Amino acid sequence: MVERRTSQHHEGAQTLQPFDSAIARFCGGFGSINTRRAYGEDLRDFSRFATGFGVGELGQLTVGHIEEYLQNCRKKGLSGATIKRRTASINGLLQYSGMEELARETGNILTRHIGSTEELQPLYSLTGEEVKKLQEVSQNNPRASAIIAIALGTGATLAEMRALNVSDILEKESLRVGVRFRGKKSKREITLDVGSSAIVRKYKGNREGENALFARKKTIKQGEDRLGRQSIFGDVKQYTKKIGRPDINLRVLRQTFIMNIQVKDSKKLAKLLGVGGDYAYDVLLERRRLTQQLPQSGVLFEEATK
Image 1 (cartoon, rainbow, N blue to C red):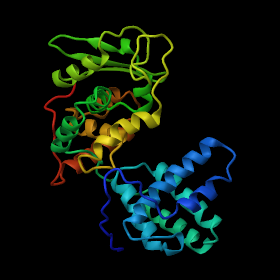
Image 2 (image 1 turned 60 degrees about the horizontal axis):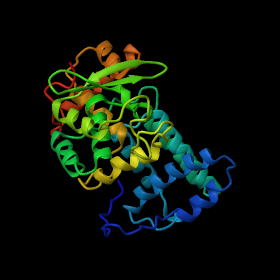
Image 3 (image 1 turned 30 degrees about the horizontal axis):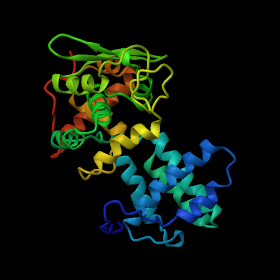
């Protein structure tokens, strides 16, 4: 086991990560902007993690550092496909840097951690207390508050969040609003609780029609630019840092929703999430059961949907 160091940073200071130069050179060799971005994001995440072990340069990496990182990815609830992609990014950087032996050992680690019979892991979710803190610190930012309220109240994915139009916020009885998702593969509608409804209604204001709900500018003009993935992620990230959870993203908020909905049947859960696959959601219910057994697990909502 590698001993992880605790580092202190001044708020607002720019931190230089240990592999920045190597990552820039490696990613610069790809012609596609999307490929450079994907590899870069994976490797910078790994670089930030390595900083906690006092790693100052690529040559200081060991098998133990990489194994700790992959274990951390699993604890976060990342999918096997995502972990494989991140491992491939690390492998590519190591090979590019002439560290072929460590790259081979990294492949062996992946086989141990991601396999057809891998052990089910608990969901990586926020506790009720963390949810309350997140809602409190973001309340002065209408757009961020609305994103967080919808993510926690519906389990929306990034793609679903970006696709929302103003007309997808529907007025319901008892001061509540419904959020309608109209994806190509699935359609669903979930009613928010009164508090979350008030947040979303306030952000929506008097806007109407098919304009993007989350746009670069909150206007009533046609053809608004939809907020990009990184912008939505950034709106959430700035407040998760304030509650001491910089590791949180929209996927974790979706898993928090799954933890809190009062559904015990996999088909009903699949319908609520707008997806299919009975086996996958039997597995998801089992992961929820495992999470509920953890000491820090806390259910916030009495009922998230009706």
